[in-house]
Length: 270
Ligand SMILES: Nc1ncnc2c1ncn2[C@@H]1O[C@H](COP(=O)(O)OP(=O)(O)O)[C@@H](O)[C@H]1O
Ligand SMILES: [Mg+2]
Image (cartoon, rainbow, N blue to C red; front, side, top):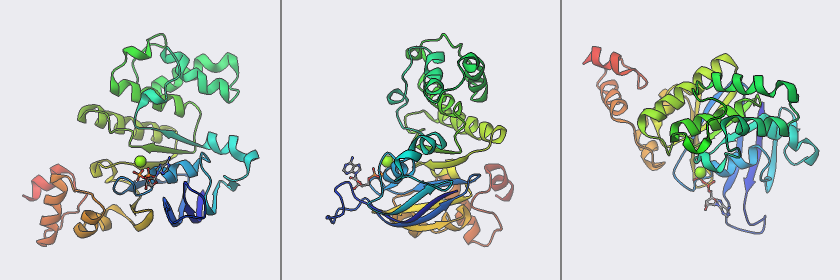
């Protein structure tokens, strides 16, 4: 469990009125799929950095499976448990080849040297990246690079995986593939997902959505509750995808569709 207790955070210390996060109180279970939503600058990335101890809360505490992120001796375990995949895979890639890239993190955590080859293959299969380990990273497509970033972190068996706008540089097809791969991998080897995105269609099946606004948590709820509140979404800078807003209109007209109904279900009703 990740426990965030009354956390406020400023990049400028406590003597400031410039808060990136204010009074955040939230638990994230080890098997949960939680989405962080909200406009640019609302605090989503800052909270991610606090969760794996890159930054420390200015007020309040965060524990990961009982370990405080402000206890320096616990940071290696916390950074192993909480991994982040960022927006731009190139900022994360350290190897010249696919194999080197995955091996780097494994060596860092002291993975047995004789087993690293097996683990590289395991991770490549898990994310369905059909690239030999000798492939040059520079020759991969954007979608493949992002899958490699995913493989490199999943090789380390994180308990909590943060995806900070990881799909924002991908085209729609690569984006869909990445999301499918993520969920397939999670079924095979469960881990919690903390998913940060502007694309609501990627989080329709999340367990909970957390809406951020100017550093505050504005609302927490199930997708069906949050995605039916158009005023709330608009004020948080979020726009429903077309088929969702269609579903919502049908729902409001008394037709018993859910806002998370699939396109096929909607077609049936229409
Ligand atoms: N490295 C930084 N130094 C100072 N202020 C920052 C830094 N990173 C983010 N901020 C500020 O913190 C607030 C929250 O930003 P951020 O967490 O990046 O939001 P989001 O990820 O939701 O776009 C914003 O006001 C932003 O300008
Ligand atoms: Mg951000």
